[in-house]
Image (cartoon, rainbow, N blue to C red; front, side):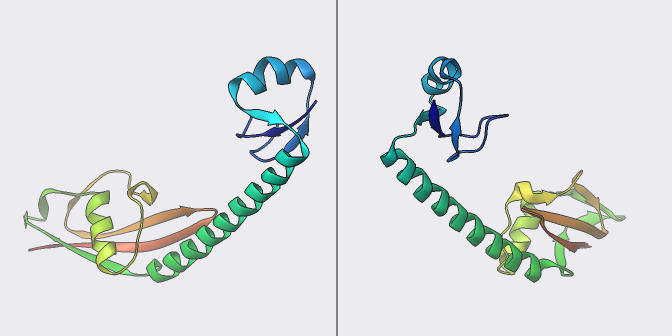
Length: 146
């Protein structure tokens, strides 16, 4: 039986792939779960268009990620917080860093910032941002007292 995968399926393939599978596996698992559809000529045409569109979107995402990483690499982001004796009242977290970056025109998602624990003291802290698809940027966060 020839099917088109609608979603990624472990050990079979990725969404949009056209695969030859056993009838029982297709009828009893893939088709009822909505993970695949029959590979008709019309469905094959739609699948190839969908794969091309996804590839184009991925290339656009990678390009913008590389631009953002180039802007961010080597920068120092300054964040001012209230502090006493070198310790902050509160902490600097991912949201604070994203806000500071957006003031520079750099858009980063909070989940992409690698921060093991919130920053709770004054100083300079090296951080990384993983944009995905092997696109990374390193920068420093400088926390100063107000």
